[in-house]
Length: 256
Ligand code: NAD
Image (cartoon, rainbow, N blue to C red; front, top):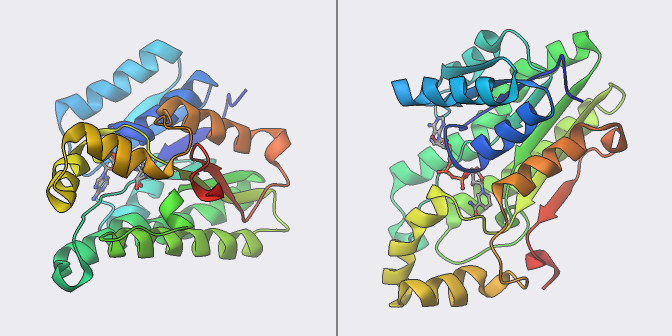
């Protein structure tokens, strides 16, 4: 049980982040949800998680593209035993046409935010004598695909950060790992479908089967609950010596 632990999950008002937050709450953790918006819906999501699982759940607005906000999120959380760096965006374009503002935003949100939140959280994990940092990287943290230069660079960077911080905390009761999902059907993936249809001049069905799941040998999307279950495994005693590594949850993608 994760009772008495507080988990901070960045980018968790939808998709994988919310799925992981829900599984951690189901296991008894108090959860701090986050995104860059601050709408009644965001707070309602936290209230619903609190009610469903009988834990404390709060929503804290913080923009993961901003260093100060990343650090303020950890401060406002009050406590952070489990840090899940999940916030992420995508943009698909050939490198020579890749918009500079998109490159900068992807590097900031998908990679640098994990540096800032980790830097803020590790000292208190040390002080509390227990901690788990779980970075939601990607199969694209280990392999590449065309037209995703910023995303692939950022996710490889997150894997590098994971290994480095694991070494720095190796003698502490803290582990630092990355989950590398293959395709999970979430709003982020949904939003890539039109761009990819244009890029390859294909129908929606062909994009799903022949582009997205082409490299996912299982031919099935992974689920947000499976990401949550993997996070819970990393938080369990069985995970105590797992540090500085990646766990692929990708239907065989990286075995190809
Ligand atoms: P999603 O769009 O549903 O979720 C992304 C989350 O990040 C949302 O909650 C969004 O509000 C938040 N976010 C975006 N910009 C932010 C900002 N500036 N500050 C704070 N929060 C911000 O997408 P998802 O598929 O659930 O993606 C979650 C993570 O999983 C991402 O890091 C993504 O790269 C990774 N991932 C997803 C897949 C997949 O197939 N869905 C595969 C591999 C990795």
